[in-house]
Image (cartoon, rainbow, N blue to C red; front, side):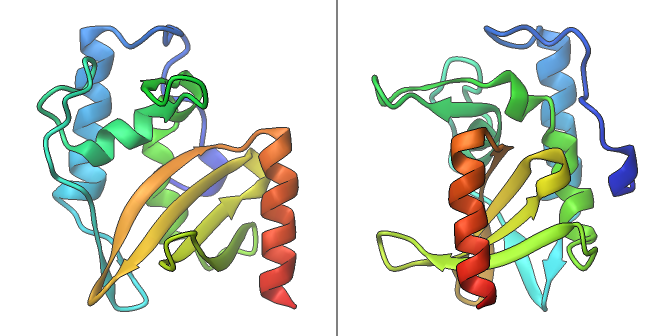
Length: 163
C-alpha cells in the first residue's frame, strides 16, 4: 500500500470499541504487518512488546497492539479505545517502509527517561509513529492521529532536530 492510498480501515468503527469481526481484522493486520513480517529500518529490526495485555478489549493480545488501538486518559490514567488510532493500524507498515518519502518528517528526541526515540510523522495525514532505540534493535512504542495541540509540539521538535 502506498502513502497516497491510506484511508481509514472501517467506515463504521464504533467510538466505544470494535465489533469482534473488526477486532479480529485489526489484530490480523498487526500480526501480519508487525509480528510475522518484521520491518527493518537502518539495519535494525523493529520489535514490539509481546507481553499479554490485560485490557478488556485486548486481553491476551500483545501489549503493543493495545498501545496502537487505545489511548491513555490524562484523567484516569487508564487506556481507552481510540477509534482514530485503531482505524489507522494498517498505516504503520507503509509509512515505515516509505520513511524516505519527503512527506514523512523524521526526527529524533530523547524522552524523559533518557531514551532516544524516532518519530515518523506523516504530517499531511496527521499521523505519527514512535519507535524507541533498544540495542541492538528498535521497539515500536505507539502510533496515533496528531491533534492540533500535538501538531505544534511535533513541528517544534522537528524544526529543532533539523537545525
